[in-house]
Length: 474
Image (cartoon, rainbow, N blue to C red; front, side, top):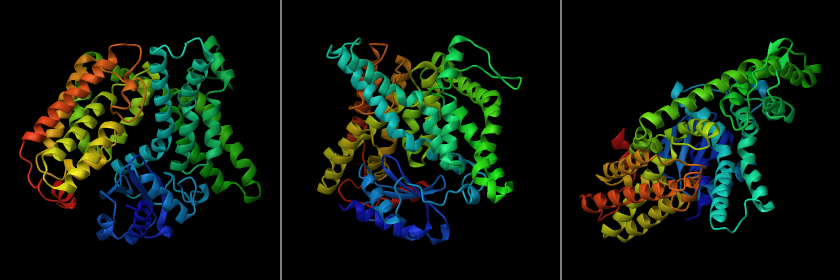
């Protein structure tokens, strides 16, 4: 399959390069934000070769491709003539307050679009950090690296650097979403982490700005404060763009932003964001202590539907709010591990029971991708939603694994797509946690595999079109 051609064909279907406002991709989806929806050929969205499913979600046209999505993205980026993914029309002078030139769509779509735009570009760095930590844990457990060595020290601070400077990374992505100058936004993130302020927080020193008390709190690894700060700063910058004379705008607009945002950030928005983050972390901790089975079971059960409608990204802010507070997360890691393994087990069972050679080959591929890569969309669109009775089997298997994960107290210490390969992300302070993860994996796999293998699944002897699934759901 020529995935570069797939990307170019997708570009053609959404109206060509002149109709693209923003281009991004995640682990499996090529995502277009378009200027004029009427130019998109809706009838041909699902006819692009190499695309498992095309859909409109969160204000974007998304093409589900699989692990080869980067080839498609690069082909489109080369054709459009961009390097970072954003088409060069995001200037403060012509952006609406939301950062988009058109604010069409319901509140849910807007919220999903904001979350995706802010967090998805940062995910590769977060995953790299998680996998580095997991590898380091393995090396130390095997006594291959001494915790007192320079290698250990360097690898540790390299992995931790992503979380320490997370506000700066999120400032850059938030600036693109809200239509603000990235340099200014990153400065707002960096000032929260400056050693002078951090040392004052550690020492318990009180600070004030023109008599306004500063809440002395650490913003390292926080999520909500910087997003609030950049959102408000984008309005201040647009105000300067509108009312400052052109002759001084270039010099005094950044000054205006900083004069307004320094006291607002340290005295109002930062503290509000920190309190919100602490509240979310406290709520999640309460759920874990009082109803530990709830979140993993819920996520393990409905994960296929969350992925289908792009709702899985909603968990990202919660994950990092909890991780920054307690050093681990229970929001998605335990439940998604059960789901991802269930998807792989379902595809493997279909591969073994089907008499169709094409189905067997495709199912084996999607099974491997889900089990070892944690990428489930090929399995979901290719088989879970394609054959009757498979979706309930996957949901039951995910629920069984998620229930055990919750009852056993499984947590995740680092972020990466849950899979067999990324099991080390469940290694941490509790030595038994990794075995809880293995048991969760085994339960989800066995339950789903047995159900799919023995439950009647129609049409496993012939290839059917993927379109039937989504139409049926609608």
